[in-house]
Length: 212
Image 1 (cartoon, helix red, strand yellow):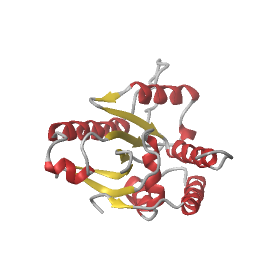
Image 2: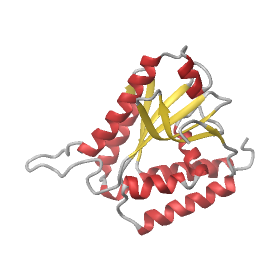
Image 3: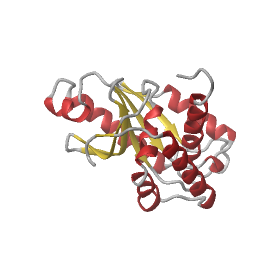
């Protein structure tokens, strides 16, 4: 599914998918990207669609793609969005190993270096931002991918586990995500645990009395 396909988000199915993700994270401290993460999400389109919520302009995800083709040059692992709001999230998965986000603390230092794995994933997003910008929103190819001009696009990196991060590590990760933009596109980053918690909170809020 290298282009967007329509999807009717099913909250009950999504809740079951979140339970399955929670069970996976409880059973496996380490996750391999190609062997574990990508197959897990590919088998669960509702969970993949929920990645779209990383973009605050997404109200109800109704489009999802696996390995979305970005003009023949790049492909993101998952893309999800809201066609009515014209808002999308493009997702790069990386693994969840002990040093996925930060390396070991160098001797005599108090601050860890960002890991090569993190910087590799971030560079993927940089290239997507460049390629989308180079294409231009008025082209036929752009409209074939996104269906309309001027979409809101968020670039999301999902990597690592909370358990491997100190409080200061998490603060640095959140600061970088909050204060980084890639041209016209905003950037965000979740650990796998953070993604699970974020979507659970969204479902809880949606279930409150008076919620739309």
